[in-house]
Image (cartoon, rainbow, N blue to C red; front, side):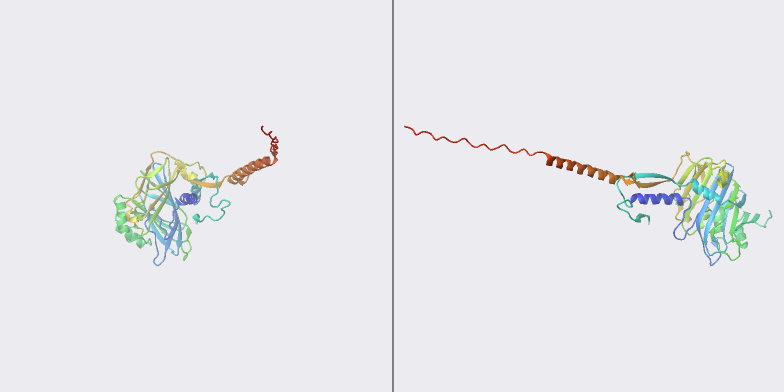
Length: 375
């Protein structure tokens, strides 16, 4: 029972460590804060995947969302430290990443039968981880349509003016955004505002959306997280990091200690992953929980780990040891019983065949001769 639970837990951590989900009202940490849909509609992110690549000069972030609900529009904002270029990404990237971090399977054999092995066959119930001026304090660097995304690249010197511009141009975002954006305005960051809108009018946002690929200069790798403190539900972070070496977060920024699902050098040379990983061959897959988003204290700064120690999830397949297709325990126990039976049989047969030596004949006592009378 314990082994079965351990196998299930390992599988869940391996397959869902980068694609974490909550069973009720899922929420994901993508550095964008709460995704806000149209009034009287709802939207949920059932899967969010992010890849961060840093080559020492430039940073790239590729994000893909899978959404559900009846909303026809929704928006979020990604702060970036320098001016960003935005384009659509290749969905195949995430399939290749899933293959790269897939757990390895190893077999462990056990001698005695357990639940699920003969003669205890049955169901295992224990299975039941981001131009022309707009005027004032907001500048519009560019605005473009990319697939289902209306993307605006903005500069701002006043968080209130930025919030007002976003609302005036259809980017409905949380009312508390003014306060949350102040640290970025103070540091002169820029912004990628994204509005989700389906290709056909009247169509609800649903399913896997095209990935967005952001590229910007960076003195050090950073994953924007501060705006996620606006979320009202627990948050989960799943992040692939491509760099020259194994990477780790500098601090936990108010969440649980980040865990490493995978760490190792990639040997992929083809496809979207091969192109993105060129020059940054070391992949680190991180996962983290934020039970109380209000405690998120800043953005994730990534630093080189002390060593490029590889990490690989392992799934153990437990099998009953067999000999020629038959359970080894059965053959062993049966063999012992057979030997014991044979030995007993031999003893019994020998006992029966041993000749019976008759007892020696009883000799009659010699006759008593009467003595002659005296005198």
